[in-house]
Amino acid sequence: MNNRSSLLVAATSARGLAASAHRAGYAPLAADMFADADTLEISLAHCLLDLAAVPVAPVMATIASLEQLVGERQPIGLVYGSGFEDKPWLLSAIAQRWCLLGNDAATVAQAKDPVVLAQFCAASAIPHPEISLEPPGDCENWLLKWRGKAGGIHVRAANPSDVTSKNVYFQRKMPGRNFSCLFLADGRHAMIVGLSRQWTSPTPHCPFRYGGAVQPAGLSRRMAETLQAAVHRLLAYLPLKGLNSADFLVNDEWFVLLEVNPRPGASLDVFESEESPLVERHIRACRGQLASLPEQDEAIAARVVYATEDIASFPSFIWPSWAADRQRSGTRLKTGDPLCTVFARAPTAILARALSKDRAQIMLKTAHGRAS
Image (cartoon, rainbow, N blue to C red):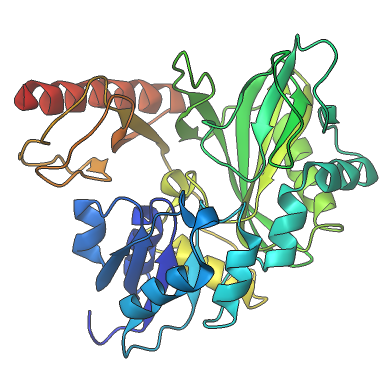
């Protein structure tokens, strides 16, 4: 690994990016909040990066952590995932030190500004839910969302006690099923990687918590082409680069664009290719090179497994090959913390999703059973 070019990867959870970078022939220098066992195994070096605390921490402290991670190495740049969308100022500071392989701070700020995105959708003739920066008079069928957050944990039903804040906005609740379009962009044009069906793993306090994704999405050809066309139209107003995703709600032959994620996301796992790793495609797209991708010949599902009770000390066991984001032995978990991610491959999306559910139960029984 020491002979490989190094690449900084940073995210709330960097395992997916680090694994793709490793497949692409890079030596990952990973920074994230978890330091999972498999992230450490495939990375040349790692540092903890508490992105949840960054808003109250000095920018230079974060830069110092990354500089310590890099040491004397000269990485080709930094690829970032979730956790930076509400911190464009941090991206600006990073870009002063390393080559930012992804959207710049200004583009991220535009993509995550609900008013700007609504304007772009109107200009592109893309249906988009009604939004408000003020609490709606009647909260029924309205959601409260935190700007720039990911994973669904920031979304809940609006209520009369909500107050105006620069950190939140309100979006009218719409019917439909969740789909995501993963795409590569060079700042002007988009190349569709694929569409995935997504689902939630709700709790009483987090009714929209992200649960997982499966591809193929199972949409009609007409609707799939409609969603892809919407992404292409959006690029006329939003100069995205690299891997990005657009989240949609689909109800029969009707749809709305919910939001844009201006960075690689969770669906990377279900579209990753051994022959053509997505991090390499991401880097090339950032440099203006878009190329066709190999087609997947089977369905793939990825499901996040959340702890259903506290674990004082995570047990030691042999992990199955289909599990990732592996907890280190001795780690302390609270109820609701991510325990791992499980993958499943099958001839159809229905079978892959069902198999991922079975495997999630296996991991819960293994972890909680041995911890008790």
